[in-house]
Image (cartoon, rainbow, N blue to C red):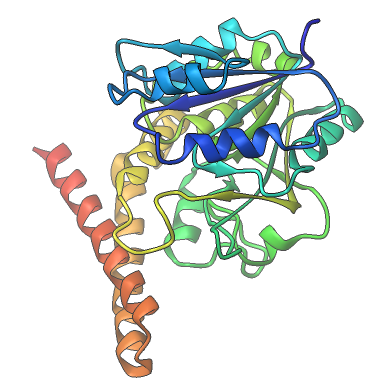
Length: 313
């Protein structure tokens, strides 16, 4: 029987997360036949072998090199057969057993929708900024840098505030690849799941290309998926900025304000200001969480400053 849905999972040293991910997927109430394809990006830690042994119904592609997120998903997509494709991160947990069916039902009901994503949350239920958003343009970057995303009707790079708590579907430009359901017809329209980006930003690239091809990209805030994303603590990696910078360059090449400086400088100013504000409030209110945010903002600002300095040499 040809499956109606193909679930594609890319692993890289994901042994701590993958069993929970697969167990919750298996326990989900999915109302049609589906297949699961796991591509292991040369983890070298026995992840691929363990999945093959413990989950005999899953197809495992054990690669000898790391293809990155887009490259590995492209391999899995080429081997898949479903009319709907679900990209699922190993650290994305389907605590809601009806989450997948809800996304499928939305695709069924709206033929113009090429991609569907759900609200991503931390384990404590807090919204995870970065689960959806809008095309990285000078204006959206400036709005994000100023901390005004979702305020006064402004659109930043990421959905924030009331935008992510809307009562119904929200039309966006892109969705996070941690849980990203795609219509095969739409994927074919953009030439598959390839991307010039190795890690971070591929999902933004895909979403914007889907919109370019005339497909709608919908975010469903009423359903959620737990995404660990390295946990909810501090010391967040700044590598997401490199991915976002890559998409900014792809989407704005040849246009006014396309210089990398128009990406980096507003964000550097915004992160620097927020670092100072969070630090002051954290000390005055004795709030460790605000002090943690201040450290994150400082790290992001420093990363951007180093990037601009390196490119100017």
